[in-house]
Image (spheres, rainbow, N blue to C red):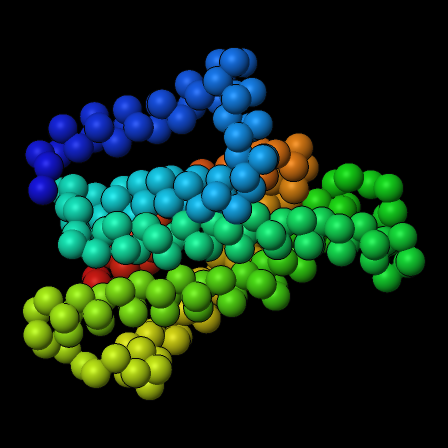
Length: 223
């Protein structure tokens, strides 16, 4: 566990490193070339680092102190796999919406804003809820394995036991309805307007916002 001021300084410094990489033309060019050449690995690394930073910040907000859990790295791997999925679906939904506009199944063909909005909306009402479930069950699996193998306690690791641990009301009301419709659709509309090479990275930065939202939701639930 880090002292708060040291943790604040370290977290902020890591974020600034990312910002500097993107601000300096030479490092930005190298970063884009490497991640585009190895897009799935790039998606994994971006989410592994930035989304994990979001988790840490969420814990800081929720508990008032920095804390790195024993399952931190394993949950980072869960985030990394999500980054690989996001890398794929951005391409799928961008191309799919464009194709639907061409044949008249969606309006405003040729409008970048319309394509970005429709891509974001369709992605967040279809793939978005599934991504939340994957993340929740991935984290639960890591937690239950740790409880069982390390602490020698907890439930037997079964699908039924994992389902029973999920707060489905909060999952639907907060994660699906509130965040998918009112936060992620506008945010991802902006992301879809960016050049393709920046979209996964921008989404990884948004995962920091997700960590804050989860912390606020947990804090509200605890009151």
